[in-house]
Length: 184
Image 1 (cartoon, rainbow, N blue to C red):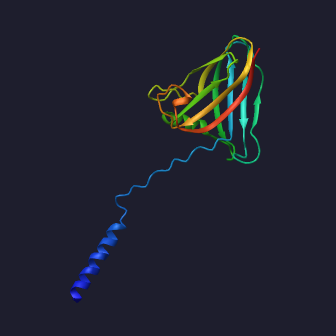
Image 2 (cartoon, helix red, strand yellow):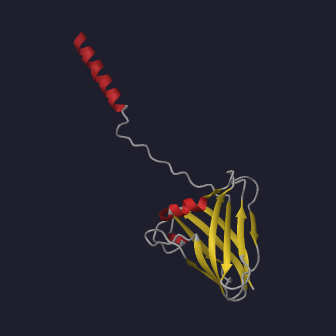
Image 3 (cartoon, rainbow, N blue to C red):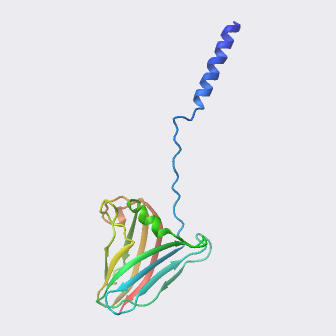
């Protein structure tokens, strides 16, 4: 009887030790989402007109303060602009350039540009991931006829690629900003 108890305890101890083993569990790498406080869109014209800057800054993140949105001026009718988007985390000192991380992880990110009806502008992607799918931190914006409306820039993390636009892209929104613009 004593031998059976000892054998039973030995078997139970072996099972308990084997179930606590973590040899087969590889810890999942957590890729924290980027903190983006500031998005600056710089539009450089192909003629001698002024550079246009669109910016949103939200230094308190999800706090009570609204983002500060600025537009430096109107677009010029009939003008093409080279667009560049820069993303910053200004909670760091010095500010961290998140654009580099987004471009390094281009297969996991995509910018979308949504133009309201009535605003006569078009956009075209100018940079892509390694599979040839749009990234969008660089683009071309062409201003058409005199008009006004909004343009929304949305950065999606882990969208479906390729996609037919923001409606079927899925993923999580890293940043979204809407700017009121006019073409003169």
